[in-house]
Image (cartoon, rainbow, N blue to C red):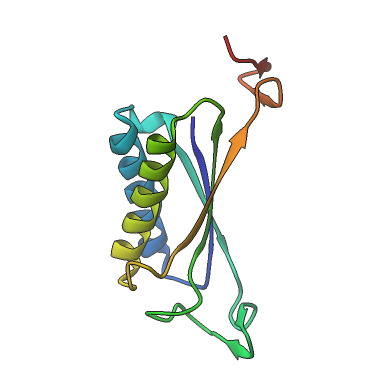
Length: 126
């Protein structure tokens, strides 16, 4: 179950909704899994609250101030699956926001066995 957290400058609500569904669908397709197993959230970084050096942005520029993306998933994914998740998330975000394809910063974090609680239980690797 990948969980995707996107932090980015202000966008319209409709754009955010499209980004979230494109990301969950893209990752699910890359993993050949059902999209209901991928969750995504959006956190807005306020205008002029994101600096690249001394450049503060009010909204999403085309080629700077990349959306900051964190994908967290249970341990055991292959390097190929991890790369596919990162690529799918970045491509979906860039396409939906109309920004440069390379203007997304994405990081993958592995959630270790016994360190996740969901569904009322601690999840452990079988």
